[in-house]
Amino acid sequence: MITGKMKVTDVVKAYPGAVEIFNDFHIDYCCGGKDALEEAIQKLGIESKSFIELLNKKIVNQPQKSNKGQVLAVERLSEMEVPDLIDYIIETHHSKERILLSEIDELINKVLLAHYEHHQTQLVPLHGLFSDLRKELQEHFAKEEKLIFPYMKNSFTGDNKTGYVKDLEDEHEAAGNLIKEITACTNDFTAPEDGCASYRLAFKKLQELVNDVYIHIFTENSLLFPKYEGGI
Ligand SMILES: [Fe+2]
Ligand SMILES: [Fe+2]
Image (tube, rainbow, N blue to C red; front, top):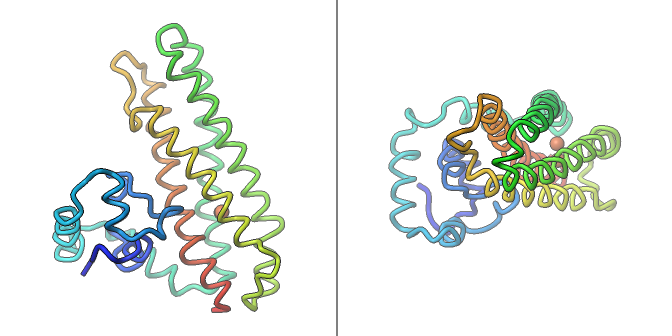
């Protein structure tokens, strides 16, 4: 059963199907996942008791209707050892997000030019925010793949004297903050009525990227790092 005292991240570990609802309501389960669920709900200005009742009804009492793929994935990842989990993260999230970043970059440039006249107040800040996010993520992936992940694989003793985990968590938080700004700037990924197909596609792919980054950060912060630090 889900309670308000549970940490958001623990709710996702126990009931991965909650991710979909958390995404819909912008409950941060990656960087802000250490908050108690009731605090996270209150921050949104929602009444926590009825929201938790809804979660239990949808996720705990009707697990067959929740996202089965997500449930199976988190269960499988929880059982993996650090080196395998690292390979999984690179193959799954880094690869997918690199492709999305380059596709979105091209689309946003195209849309910026086509709709500059009527939508510059949205597109100019979005272009800046997306450029910052792309830079942050590309450099972060390089640091993980070339420096920190090989170190974690080779010194698999839970040794964290280097502060690498804290470094990565801070970078995740910076990316999470940019994502929140992008979500607000795009009106929750809703293209304007007069937006062309490329406008809509850019927003759709941005949302896909954001959802993937959230699961990615959750997998590192809440599954990989505790396993590494605990020497599991
Ligand atoms: Fe990563
Ligand atoms: Fe990361």
